[in-house]
Length: 249
Length: 315
Ligand SMILES: Cc1cc2nc3c(=O)[nH]c(=O)nc-3n(C[C@H](O)[C@H](O)[C@H](O)COP(=O)(O)OP(=O)(O)OC[C@H]3O[C@@H](n4cnc5c(N)ncnc54)[C@H](O)[C@@H]3O)c2cc1C
Ligand SMILES: Nc1ncnc2c1ncn2[C@@H]1O[C@H](COP(=O)(O)O)[C@@H](O)[C@H]1O
Image (cartoon, rainbow over the protein chains, first blue to last red):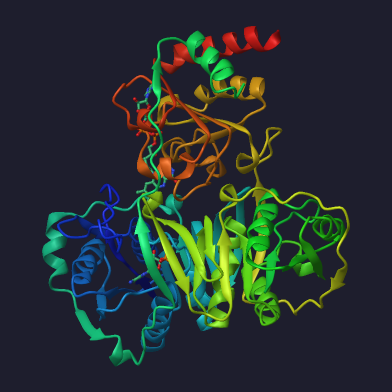
């Protein structure tokens, strides 16, 4: 069976983002970019399913600027078999991404799509659910464990009160949560090998998709800063301040 | 303008986060309806009917709505949505699961994590783990929005009860089946509803270490939270996680112990009214958001804190 893994190129999670002075967005020039951490978990899960003999092929796909090629190289170096780059210069929102992915699914016919639950730039947490809806497939979101059978997949999901286990008919969409696995480190020789793996590039137009952002970003600003606090020298002073100054005890 | 709010509940009680979503709804429209889909949950529908600002409750009852799948909920809601300008749900794991599915069926965008309303089509939401906030304008005929509960007060109970109208359930889809749920049992208040939270990080060292926090939580009637590192290490269950990808909380008092203050953690708690940090590293970033910081070894400070609380609160 084939697994499709969508991976997004985002500002690295260690970077402290800065809002542009004109309020049009955040500073991306000369900023370290990486694969969205949740997508690393998705790739890792696909590789483990392949290593367990349940999956034959892993196709990674990234949509966006030509620089997404780097993200796909990371996916290939981790262990994806081939990659697909879908380019567009337009701003992408989850609904558009889901439509592009639907078109990719139509070409690739995977039995399973594993993706991140959330991109850490837009923090939307939407694309997987939207893709599942557009395809008329079942969805297993916020997965912390995935068990693949012949015609179904059983997913344990992290929910607010604990865990929930669902069984989905295949084909299906699964979105990865933090505790799904621990992504492997990439070994140097694999980076070289990844360069030999096939990477096909096409445009959003070639897939027949019209990208049309429905949400217009009017302004991006810094959140109001927290006023700076004080250091206390003892537990007694802390409790006294909480009771008599902050009045929260 | 009419707003449909999807109620979160456990078939017995209406979740507090639903009340925050109703407050947001009342800011958007003059006609606020609530959908209660569940099984044997008439009491929830009645509770929703008594919330101030609610004009009608749509009540849909079926065995497969006891623990509804996103697939089943989305079909029900998408069908109903045509009557409304807005469809809202709490930005909890419940709402996040089915709401994007509804939006995609309706072919509209979704606005995640609403924190402020600036106009009928203008919404403010955090991005980049709350390091920036974006104001977005929606051009869609139906606006599908998840509401961050900490940004809106809970709607109060009203003087009268709205009518309850039965909505026919849709057939169960065989795309997905809920097999089981393992819910954390706790006597303590729920994280997102608690007035006081004591949270521990990797510095707690072990599950036993968390007992020190439990004693203090019990003394204060507080909930217990955790950093991702503490959850990953298995000290506490996953639903204790506070942060960008965990729970978003804004209690009156948040006490962070042995937590360094990574941006992903701050994203979940920086709207707390008063923040206390206890950490042995005086350079820990958590101190930058703390109103009161105590540089100390937690294994010494926590027993002291417990004793001090016992002393002063007993009076
Ligand atoms: C995609 C992504 C999403 C994430 N989402 C979240 C999230 O939702 N929530 C979250 O919390 N994290 C999240 N993280 C992880 C985050 O980046 C940090 O790794 C994590 O918050 C660190 O947890 P910590 O502060 O407990 O551990 P550490 O950073 O290891 O800090 C431990 C602290 O304890 C202190 N300490 C140790 N011993 C003692 C002692 N005896 N007395 C006093 N102090 C002591 C140390 O000085 C240190 O400051 C996410 C990361 C990624 C990549
Ligand atoms: N431009 C993109 N290219 C490939 N995958 C994407 C893209 N945008 C989003 N995704 C996938 O969708 C997931 C959720 O993103 P979001 O809904 O934006 O939070 C991500 O973790 C990715 O797996």
